[in-house]
Image (tube, rainbow, N blue to C red; front, top):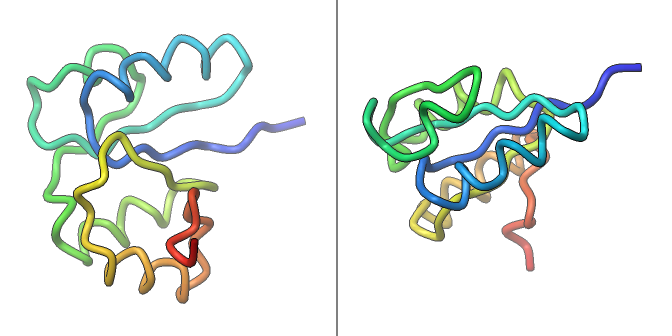
Length: 96
């Protein structure tokens, strides 16, 4: 049985705190980090550095995960809607 890969946009304290729990439950947690020195980078096995405000960067990151969630609320709403329309499992859903 394989568990979903969880992608977290943002590499702050919330993403860092998610990492141990995700690993303990058997999930893989990946982070789209704002920079190489943000809090969550050393806590996860896979971190991509990129700009969460760029739709192409977000789409590329989302392509390799099963569900996409967030460390913060700063991702542009239109990007969330575009990702959801493209079939990305965005949680929480931008429709709510």
